[in-house]
Image 1 (cartoon, rainbow, N blue to C red):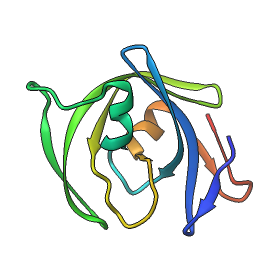
Image 2 (cartoon, rainbow, N blue to C red):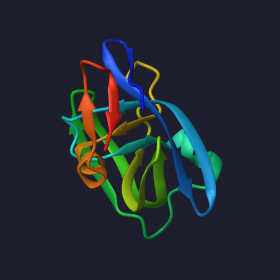
Image 3 (cartoon, rainbow, N blue to C red):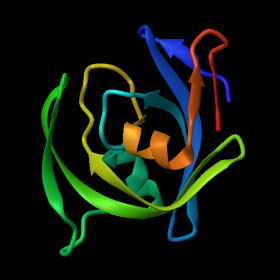
Image 4 (cartoon, rainbow, N blue to C red):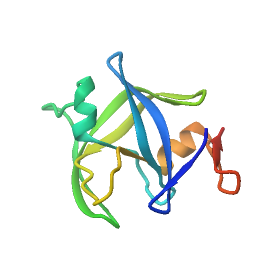
Amino acid sequence: MNIAEEYGLPFISLTIIYKGKELELQKVLLDTGSASTLFNADLVRDIGVVPEENDVVDTIRGVGGVEYVYTKYLDAIKFDGISVEQFQVEIGSMDYGIEIEGIIGFDFMRAAGLIIDTKSMIVNS
């Protein structure tokens, strides 16, 4: 999978699946400094990812500040032949001042065994 550079940051495209519904995301940041994977609440709502009574609510802190998120298990996260099923992610507003649809954190990178080649600007496993 090719890495696109925008705002000086590495972005990829991927597909998330929730309760059998698929959503393709074009601007997902590869962030080795993020412990967890996060998706934009406004976008994932289109496939039925919404807060429910039993969801865990948490606070995350990062360069973008503090944000409240809730957690969900996705059926799968897929891109370029890589698929990780039943993966827990965080859902939040992601209002960071740049167009961003999600963040692939170290938790997913490790689970998928990603290899990021910044010289060739590709990701594989």
